[in-house]
Length: 126
Image 1: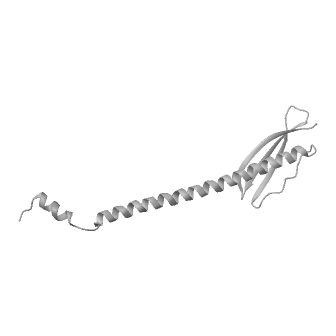
Image 2: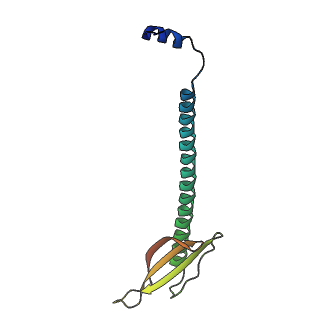
Image 3: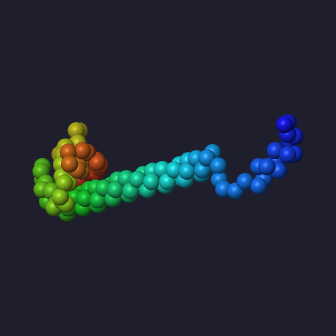
């Protein structure tokens, strides 16, 4: 009962349906695709949240510096209103070697205890 290769091919060509190996490969490909898609969505949402936080921090820093520039020359300045979770710290330093008419203003924006952005600028007593 030996069969030739041609006879084996004829027997296997008449079979219908998918085999176990083909099914496992199809499920594996689908699984990898789903995992890649979910990972991309997760990474995208994290990036959007971080960008939103950065934009809010930049806006707060810009607003705070404009408020300080519009205020009278002083050694301490009040901070502008902040959204929930954000804090602003203002550091005012006199520039050494000048007659105390130039200040270095450092504004630091933090959220939930973590520092997000630090901006420095100068104010002149005019």
